[in-house]
Image (cartoon, rainbow, N blue to C red; front, side, top):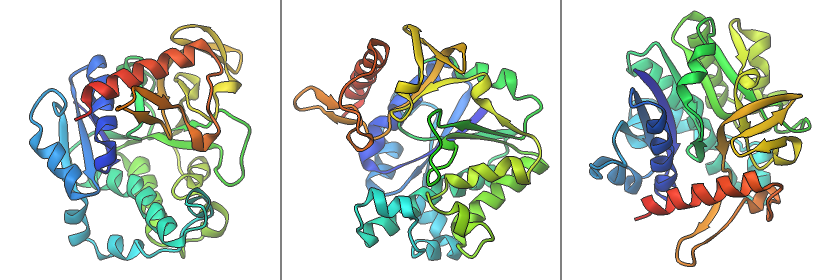
Length: 299
C-alpha cells in the first residue's frame, strides 16, 4: 500500500477528486491523505462517501494547528519574493500564500510521523496522472529522496526543481531531509533562508543533493509536463514527449493555474504563466481531457 499526500481548500476539491481518479486508474493499492485547509473542504471530503472519495483520508488543518504552536506562528512569517510577486504586492495575501506553500513539507512530514508507511509522495492537487504511477516505484528501490526538475531554463528565484511531486522514504536520510525541509519553512532564521527562501518551499529542493544522501532526480525515468515547460519539449504523438534527446511516456501533467468555467463550458489554460494558446495538439488534448474529468466531479 502506497501513501500519497496533498493540500487543498474548498476551491480545489474537484482537482483532488481528479487526482484521486488518475491514481486509481494506475492501482487501487494506495491512500491519498488530504490536508483540508478550510472547513468546507473538510466537510466535502468527509461527507462525500462515493467514488470521488475512495482511497482518500482527510485531515484538518485546524487540528494540526492545535497540536503545534510553531505551525501557528509560521502563518505570520515574512512572505517570500515569489509569494509577493504572485499576489501582486499584497503583503497580507502573500503572507497567507507563503503559509499555504509551507504546508506541503509540513503535511508530508506529519503523514510520515502519524502513518506507518515505508514511504510517502507529496503531489500537488492540480496534477493528473496520464501514466501508471506504479512504474515510478520500479526505479526507487535504493532511493531515499526523489525530486523533479522544472524542465525549462533556470530561474534563480524559482530554482531548478519543482514541488509538484516530491518523494521520501521512511529511512534515516528520507526522514532527516523531510524534517529539515519542514523546519526551513517554519523558521525563517535557518541558515539558507537568504539564498533559498525566495520561492516558498521550492528553491530549498536545490539543497537536497548537497546536504543529504540517497537523492534521485526522477526526470530520467518520469516524463512530465507543465505550463512553464511545454515549449521545451518535442512531441512524437499523444502520450509521449521528447526531452533531453529521449522519448518518454508522459507520466503526469501539472495543470498549474488552470481556470475552468463550468457555466460556459470553457477554460483558460494558465493565464498566470502566460499560456493562452496550446503549443501542440498533444497538450490541447490533455487539457480537454482534464477539463472533462474536472467537470464530472464538479458539484
